[in-house]
Image 1 (cartoon, protein in one colour):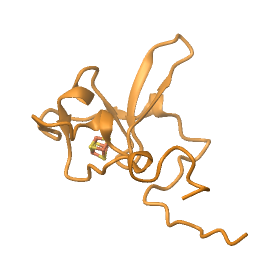
Image 2 (cartoon, helix red, strand yellow; image 1 turned 90 degrees about the horizontal axis):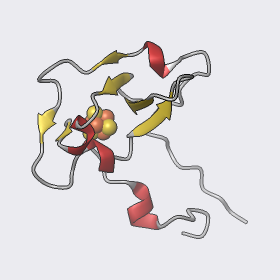
Image 3 (spheres, helix red, strand yellow; image 1 turned 90 degrees about the vertical axis):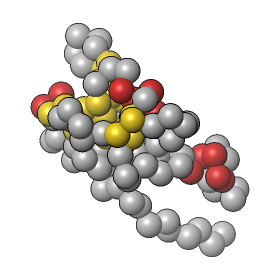
Image 4 (cartoon, protein in one colour; image 1 turned 180 degrees about the horizontal axis):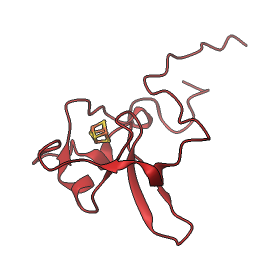
Length: 94
Ligand code: SF4
């Protein structure tokens, strides 16, 4: 079976790096978006939780945290459509 290695656009987060130590985006770094192109629908968007069960919204390519709620209304110029919407849930079949 020939499997093509896809080029990753985002470097994996080193295990030594804890998102809890990242800074939040500063005011004005993210732009308002009226459409569906917001952080939550971005390929790069992730989230995790702290030891005290607080959800952190994260952007691995910027290595920054996104304020609660801003993931629904804002984005940056690096927004990218989720690949799962293009190729489906099982990339091995595509
Ligand atoms: S790349 Fe931009 S749009 Fe995507 S999650 Fe990060 S800040 Fe949001």
